[in-house]
Structures are given as structure tokens and as C-alpha cells.
Length: 435
Picture 1 (cartoon, rainbow, N blue to C red):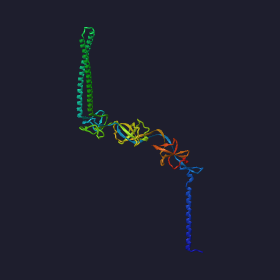
Picture 2 (cartoon, rainbow, N blue to C red):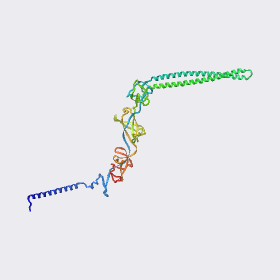
Picture 3 (cartoon, one colour):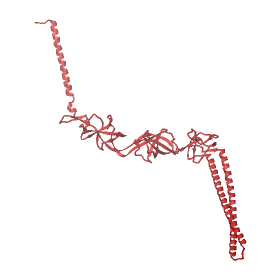
Picture 4 (cartoon, rainbow, N blue to C red):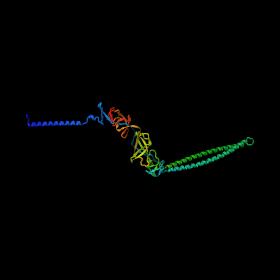
């Protein structure tokens, strides 16, 4: 049975539509097959060098490839930038030793003075009166010595005379006594007279001896008094010398707080009394460095240390280690170290801020690994050591950084292989392929 014309046309259009869809589907399938043929095979990619692992042909298990580096043994040597403080080698405030008025002052702030140079003259009227009194007492003591000496001389002359008379009378008495042994030659009364004369002479000798002793004591006392008077004069003269203030060493006057006519006196207790002048030695400076406890090893007296100051950032200065405290500040855990710097051209001033290039050294060799080899995300840092293709986690303590390596302390030996990039991604005991 023939279809109407409209139905024929509809059937023809459906047939064409089906054929078109079939053609499109075939095209898509061919395109997918083409893309699959061009893509690399998965088993080939797993064996290419540089990928994350290798394939064990026996067990078909991927073995991770780990890039490694060797542990090296080296002497630590690096520079630390440390702050410091620049001080004068000597810093002396000048006070008077006795009260007085300033008569003359010949220097001011910024003056460079020489040792022994006169800086200040003072006057103290009461000290001058004390000197006059002491000198008067000294003159009187000298006069007393002369009087005592004359008394002693007179007493000694009287003693000599008394001794001579005693010897003569005693000799006469003895002769008379011998002659009296012959009856009728010397009467008994006459012999008694000579005996009494001799005893009287003996008493005069004893009295003269006492006078001599007294005169000697008086002379000794006069001499002692004179010596004390002389010392008193010397003491007052010393006080007068204190009125002349001189420079104790070559240095710079950095303060002046008094002027002519000012009354100055020695400081007492904790009073905030300023000095007349302050003098600082600038030819030699102290560079004080608070060195951290981990950096004190390896530096001895005489070591040359370089530093810069903010005023001359392009200039490098050099001092010498002169004093090491050998005691740490418990608050900062630093040890003060002092450098001597000869500031002959007086370019550096005390108070400038220095940056010290402190040479940090060790006296023994230690182990170093690349910075990236230490993994610090765990409770304690580790490095991943590879030994006999097995991973071993080794606990370490970090030391100092030197270049692109870090000092480590732990159960490591020179030549050990460690993972270049430390991580806990590879478990302890894992088999790996070191590269």
C-alpha cells in the first residue's frame, strides 16, 4: 500500500537523521582510539630516571628514590655580628680634696691636656692660717731644742767637775786612812773630816748624773715635739698642694661644671654633687662585647677582632682581646669581653655604637649536614639517614649555621648518607633507593 506523499517525506527525513547520528558516533570512537594510542604507557613512565620511585621486578613494589648528601666533619668558623659598647680606658671625675674657692680654671670642655698639666687653682684662707700656726710651732720647737741642748751641756760639765773633785777627795781620804794606821800621825778627827768630804763629793756626782739624765730627756722631748711640728707643717703644705688640681694622665676634658669664684668641696656620701672637671683617656679605648655563651669558645687574649661604628660604616677598625671576664651574666647568659683599641687619630669617641665581627670558632671538629636535611617539625629534630638502603631516623641537636650547612650533634659519623630533604613522609625502616 502506498503511503501518502506527506508520510513518505517524513520517513525519508527520519532515515537521514539516524544515518547522521551513526556517523557522529563513529567519529567520536575513532577520536578516542587515536588519543589512547598517542598517550605514554604507565609501566614505561614508572621506569624513567628522575621519577619518585623504581619498580622491583620480583615483587612489583615501587621503591622510593631519595636524594642524599654526605655528613662532613669540619671546624666551625663563622662571624657573628654582635653589638658592643665603646668606653674610655680611664674616666676620672676631678674633685677637690679640701674645700675652697676656685681662683683660676684654665681648661674647658673639649680641651686636650697632658699629664701633670695645671687645670685648676684654689684658695683656702683657713689652710694658710693653719700653715702659719704650724710653722710658728715648728720654730718654737727648734728654740726648745737649743735650750735643752744647752742645759744638757751644762749638766754634763757639772758632772765632769763633780767626778774630778770626788776622785781627788777620795784619794786624799784613802792616803789619810793609811797614814792613820801609824799611831800619832793623823788624828781621828782629821780622818773623819776627809771621809765626809769624799761622801759629799759622791752625792754631788749622783746629783749631776740626775741633772744630765733630766736634760737628755728634755732634749729628746723637744726633738720629738719639733718632729711633730715639722710633720704638721708638711701636712698643711700637702693640703695647700691639693689646691692645685693637675691632670692625672693625657686625656680630653669632657665636662666642666665650675667657674672662677665657685666654692668647691669634696663629695660626701651619695650626694649628687658634680665634679669640677671630668677627664677621659681617649688614646686607648675599651670595646666591651657581651658574648653569648655559645660563642665564647676558641677566642683567647691577643686575638684580633674587627668592628665598625655607625659614624664610619665604610671603615673597618681592629681591636685586640685584652680582658675576658670568665663569668657569665645570669640574666643575659653573656660573658663580657674587652678589646683594647689604640685610638691614636682620635676618630672614635666613647659612646659610639659598634658592630663587632666576632669570630665564632670551635677547638674541635663537629658534624655538618645541609640545612634542608634537618627536619624540625617533630618534638625533636631528626635527620633521615640511609644505611644499606634502609631509612633510619636519627635524633639530633642543631648547632651553628655555616654557609648552607648546619652543625648537628647526634649519632652521626663522617661519610654517612642523609636525605637531602629531611621529612617524616618516609617511615623509619623503609627500603629506599639512595641517589
